[in-house]
Image 1 (cartoon, rainbow, N blue to C red):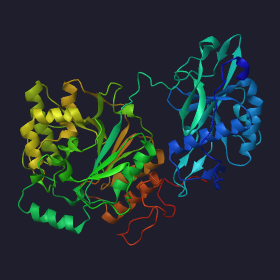
Image 2 (image 1 turned 30 degrees about the vertical axis):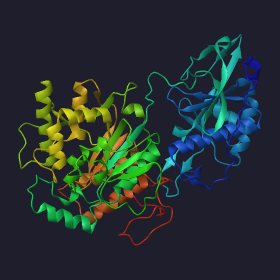
Image 3 (image 1 turned 45 degrees about the horizontal axis):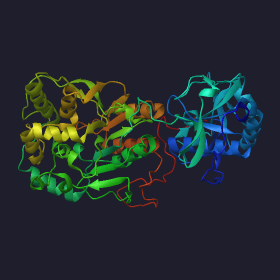
Image 4 (image 1 turned 90 degrees about the vertical axis):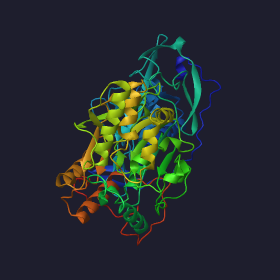
Length: 538
């Protein structure tokens, strides 16, 4: 927009990145795709930087925008469109590029980028990608919208409003500045990247609880200690501890769909998985590091562990808690879990807690819900009727410390219970969230799309196939029920293949070298998977 009179003097846009080597390509449904192992955010950033580089080399001035949905975009003067289209056409001759414009029309840039824009002044540019295993593709949803801005009579007309401006902007109201983003300096409009009132900007950590139930040492110790206890329905079942490396894929789901998470803590007393390398973002914490009374250890009670999580050293004030069978299914933002003021958003389930009090024949989960209900009724004169969805739950350390003082005996009793008991509280399942709700620190929401699948039931196999094909939920849980209808070998194979197909992008904390002979563990470099519903149509 040099002709508009917008001030640009003194602003230099410089990339810190060199031009990457050309990636291999393949046809998917007859359309050329880059073959790449990349996350959605990485793909979006790479395409943004590549489009900017193309425009820079063509001498086309551009401005970095923040779209209304928070994604990046670029704007150029409409009078520079011929040079921009020529440069994009040349780039598309060397690698696959496509454009999507309003109305859902998608066309390749190859041959003539002008044709892809048609008569419109905006289009989303992207390089289609497919993971080497053939089960994961990225398209226009990670693309970069390029906008052609018109200037006439001291007024700028943009094709879309963005995070800062309306479509119609007075030139005199605009101040051009620079911003550092994505490894380079950009021209932009002043205020474009100032956080909005609707954004949550504090650090968020995530805590996973995990147990390696396949460990022979764990099984011996648990059996020895359990011989002295009577536990509730299902609480002694092997399903509570067996696993098929779900934690690896739960961590990959963070890498792929929630990269804004600051740190990940894995609360476990099991040996670290063989594939987990040292990484500043992932920390294993042992029970003795955060239990208030280490004399209560060892423990085989998840309720006890969950009642002590706020004591993890270095944990952010705002954090999410999840089990290792809970996954992010698509890109999520912090605002799904916290309001801009830090109020947590928890997801209620349609499942009712049910009537009656705690009893030895009930499961630990059902008993804890009833104990929680009694405590909340006593304190607030209100009852709770619903369970929470099986998905990542938001919490605040300060509220948990407050609860530990308010319900001191209940926290201490639960932390001291070696196995689940009929007197446990369940802090992270419902007690925290309804306590915070009653004190103005939480709200219930049904906004996130969630899915709960019992992988040991016959319908669960079909549900996993649909989940993989659609990829349309924010979070899901693949639970190992304690009443199996499916042969364990079949269940394990389908579950492992589903997870590898859904989350094929290796995280930076995974060891790169393939390892064999580890109980049938699939390596990250496994061959393409024959998962029903996961194959790319020809």
